[in-house]
Length: 379
Figure 1 (tube, one colour):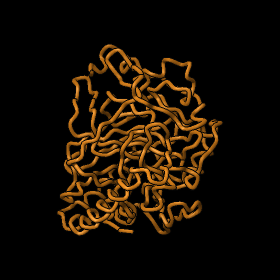
Figure 2 (figure 1 turned 180 degrees about the horizontal axis):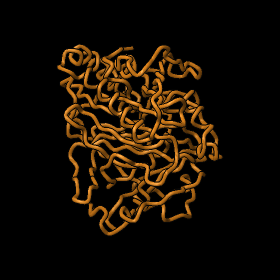
Figure 3 (figure 1 turned 45 degrees about the vertical axis):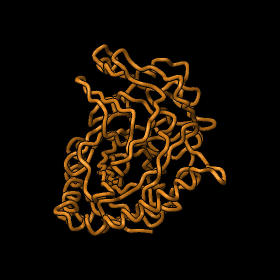
Figure 4 (figure 1 turned 90 degrees about the vertical axis):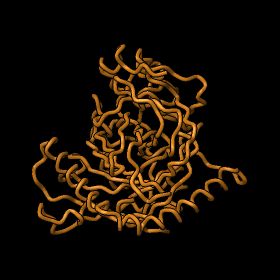
């Protein structure tokens, strides 16, 4: 397993076209493709380790950026000055490995809190999961009216061909709400399928362009769970799409698509809080999750993080990075599209959900500004 520069904190895992966590049958060509891709990616990222450490300021800017994001978050949330708590990842699937740094104060060197090593290899991405929606808004705050634990995310892209940060890529970011429901998609496996207004909802979805450091940031909530899946976040990297005047973005190709995961002890802590504790769907742990099982064999797919206050209730800053091959363009199929008039399901997407999928409450609707005629005019 390759340990890379601290700026590369996580890798992303595969999604499924017809299921949220597939298992490939023996002899499936996808297995060979996956193995070849990972071997190449592992070599590429190993080569990048030295380059990233030598590149002027990449590592230092990452530490300063995460510290600034955490301080901004605490100001926005009116959290009193407390010592940050740092989580150390000892084992991807360990449930009680959470440790606290002792002697940490506001004067502690930020590198103590905001660096952190993690193993990372690329995983091949061939599908986007069952609840992808194109035409979403470019924005920082994705929450709208959704309640949950505040989650600030710092996400970086590294080009495995040049070992340099990747600017000007639009990163798509989407996940379910606290009760395990996705906005923008009507399906029997996604909350109340009789609620047709959900196709117009845009909460907990959005995009952000990477800056000169290859970084995109968001404010969202910690995702809940749904039957068959542990808590996770989907991301996709777009290079050649269209940004519309109203702030929406559309692209039919991706350079990479995958998922981000969380420490199991953190999930357990969050699940005790409202509204997460109203979720009646069966809880799947990291150890039981199909994608987590596949990815943990080769990579550490868990984000690094600090608490913003004394407990999970105060929120988190989390960070992750991935290496992408910017020469790769894969097609992406959306379960639904968001237009000026609102959302429209795509009957030809082949989307599907996991067995016994989400049955939680699809609470929260898109604000008037996002469901109006001023919304996306994309095709």
